[in-house]
Length: 415
Image 1: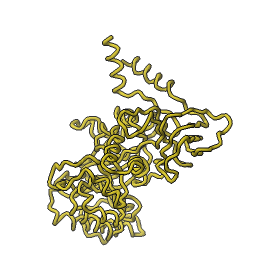
Image 2 (image 1 turned 45 degrees about the vertical axis):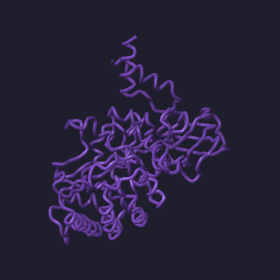
Image 3 (image 1 turned 90 degrees about the vertical axis):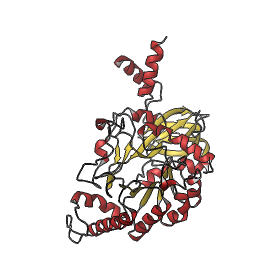
């Protein structure tokens, strides 16, 4: 088995273009996800892991490694939002699930970055779906569903083989309002009081000064974690579905000048104008239209389309499970089938999720961006399209993953 894995990994590397100091991908259709829009017969120059030039008439540097991409479609590497990629292998096994810290004394200061396993078998599978970065989010916080609690700090990770996965260790603080058993009449006043305490602490000039806070049981670590959220430097990432809950959350956020990312938002379309007015962003599964509880009664297959039409910044995802991250582009395609403009769907799986969570270094094909580039055999939102090669930081990534290795093993054993 080890010999087979080694040979497959070597084969995957040698059959792909290797990184050169300067690499030029030419004659491709390029979906930049940026201000340049869609470019036909365009070229991309990559130098030292960065995009040095992109356009239809770029100057090819002397000595560059040139690859003809005629007939190919190029997008930025895809960015998966709100996932457990790298922290969960199997959901029902404690030693294979680090997605939350329910028994910890910490809440907002839980740091998911320490749970990310770069050797996770799911990361190569995600790469083969075009995923170059992901926003990994912790789940329910201290006390589980019994009371309101922050889940912890999200992290932006890189899926590149053989490198440190952590891009941004503190990309926002999560809060799950979907299943808290405390009634709404108590939840929202309690949440407002907690966030007001965080704002009070964040405004203090002396670190560690916890005087004047109204809520009990604060830890200094949790207050420090919430300070960037209170200052509007990092988002509060709220899992919420019901339209009235979204409205209440937006009122609190606007009063405290918070940057908000709503996750799920099954009934978001019903309050789309309110979300846009609050300048909040939304992460959603565009085909999540079958109500599973009374918070999702108004769920609609046109949720993404209506939110987008109202001017809400969207990120599209499959679901939180790391096993399904590879399906991200298919879900974007289904959003297009239900009315979302194609260009906006591409942005919703590339630049939008990156920017929502503070990552300004990737997500677009533009000069100065990290060279995270996906090359496709055709339309990336069509399920029969193949990923030809994924570059992360300008390096062609291996295609061998556990599924491919097992397929090759058992196909050969059956011959």
